[in-house]
Image (cartoon, rainbow, N blue to C red; front, side, top):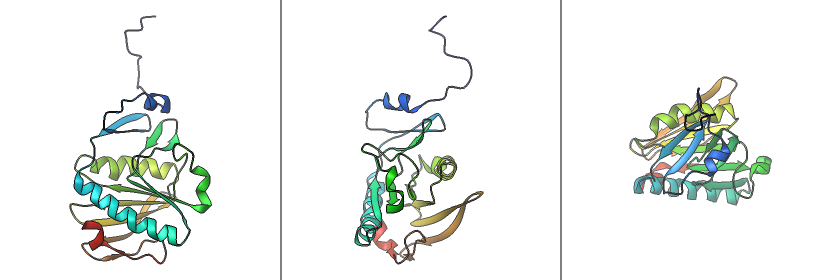
Length: 187
């Protein structure tokens, strides 16, 4: 057999391939066997992520609801789907998915902060993957438009729950009793 010739057909990458990727400052994900790479986030992206994480984490901690994690942290849905959402919430009811090195299964909430390089993947590909593997809530955060959208998983995929913009109060369905001042998120 000639090993210098690539195999015929579609190449499907696995978790084992993922573990061999370089540690070069880029974020790698494998979504349904396809490699996705994004450069490190911008300062604005990181600020929005940090601010939102602080607000959610304080509420979750105070109410003893579970744990909040932030990227980079692998969420392993299957051998061919490994993602790194910007923020991850795992409730106490699903705490068995929290492993020593990663999240091994669907979290309750995955949050993606959009950037020009990732917007299409976040809105389409990741939404499909997260729905397929049972992520109950999905948020899309757009720092350019100062907008946050919440989606809930139903039988046929994600349905919009709420949308908040500017400095409005965002009251997420996934966290009853929480009111997020979006002005603090964009600051």
